[in-house]
Amino acid sequence: MKTRIIKIIKKANIRGGVGIIIATLALSFIFDGGYRVWADNLLNSVTVSNVAPTVSGVSLNAAANITLTEDTTTSVNVIATLTDTNGGADISSATATIYRSSVSGVANCTADDNQCYQVASGSCTLGSASGNDKPATCTAGIWFVADATDSAAPTFAADIWSAGVGATDAAGLKGFATNSAQSIEVNSLTALNVSASIAYGSLAPTSTSASSQTATVTTTGNRMIDVQFQAVNDMCDTTNCVGGNEITADRQQFATGSNIAWSDPVLLGATKLASTSAQTLNLTTTKPTTHVGNTSDTAQDTFWRIGIPSGQALSTYNGTTTATAVNGA
Ligand SMILES: [Ca+2]
Ligand SMILES: [Ca+2]
Ligand SMILES: [Ca+2]
Image: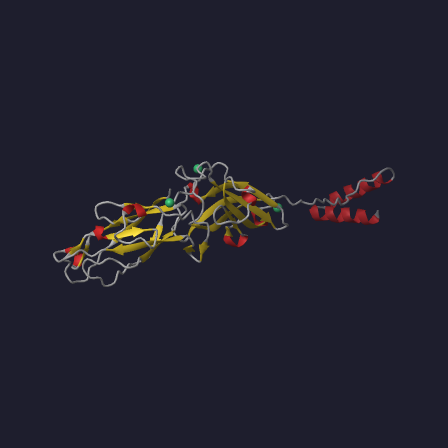
């Protein structure tokens, strides 16, 4: 009691004057016999609980359809806003999945270059926290084999490609959302590479190739292909085929079989090259599903022969042939 009175006196003294000291003392003695009024401390305590983060605004490839790059990967981003009501700084990492919509497990799919890309936190960049929010950008390299889902796609036209983003806070609580408002397609990519050259060697007039030369057609997109060949020009012995001598394009033939002689009938499967129109060769390769390094593992050899006309002038003749991928049948 004494202690408290002294405290009150001190407070009163500080605040302002002798008169108040007297009044305080008087009050103290007045109430001393009945009940007491004095100051005490109340300890206020609360624990703020951890709340899981949430994810919003998931957007795949800036809302655009995805156009692949033949024989390699295409960098594709997923962005999202991660929110944690413990403050944006509580968000510690993000992950993402980019997947074809009907794949087994959807966002929990097993990684597969054709249909499912799991993006680890190391490939997700977090921006600075702003209030409760923190932006995330996750990046995947989508391989050229990724299944097409556009309207021309042979198998998965009814699908789209989706993205899911997961957020994790410092205590390990997680949130997740997908880009359910978007319909992003992976476009068909009908593409090939062909080996650079065919050298028929030295042949006499009226003779034909004794064996075939090989040109390898590699499928470098996400569609099964056939190939069309067309000569840019007849073979000639001058630059740009101005003047000089020529061997017409139709003296060359191509086939998928290696043993078809130049003089064999067309029904055996060989096709004569033309400079006036593209000739289609039916390949048996299917859609690539894997890659070896940066390269498609799906390739087929085509076999070429030439017949030299009688009366052909002694010279070296060169020609250029264009190989074009068309959707396979
Ligand atoms: Ca939290
Ligand atoms: Ca589709
Ligand atoms: Ca075919």
